[in-house]
Image 1 (cartoon, rainbow, N blue to C red):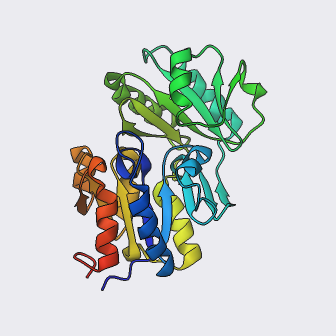
Image 2 (tube, rainbow, N blue to C red; image 1 turned 120 degrees about the vertical axis):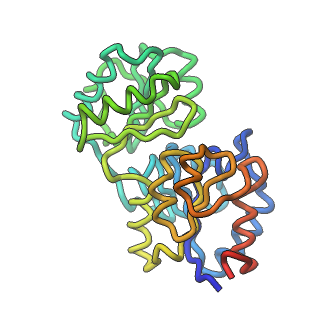
Length: 273
């Protein structure tokens, strides 16, 4: 029987259905069994830690959050890792984003204490971002921010995403990496501080090997995690390139795909036999 010790889940498009919900009663039963068997449950998402906690109110101080695509890790309510962009690099990236080559581009700066947006941003965009950033504050100038910044969360027209990602690679290689989660969403992260890096830090702490990890994802920001895990599951609703990178396929997020595979782990059914 496979000796699974860690289950890591992306949230949007993976653990959550399209209505941003999940079968809580079913998961709570499964989590009790995972906990009894010493199997760690890790939320690995590009979203803000303060938002992610709200999906698991009863167990938020027990489980681990690899939040902000790996830039901020909280385990059992304690900080384990916090990344940070040098402020000079933040300024240079903002200059690139302001060049005017990406119509309808909007973004927030994600930090340890809060996410931040320039007050000139469209109100409709900020209202949308409040669903993902439960701590979100306006600024007029960058120097008003007294925080550790570790991610840019961008939104723009899908057709301009490849152009922006190529420009980030050209102008900011080694400083920022662009990853996409689909639907015009692009995160600029600190190179190497992706979800797989966050999992690796916690696996080292816990003595868990890659082959003991089951990971689930549906986007480009999950690729490293799916490749690293011994059992990397792409969701049926994932793009083909994500499916091609993963070793296994789970039913869609709207069919409780993650919970189905967790049940297979608990039951010792293939490929976990």
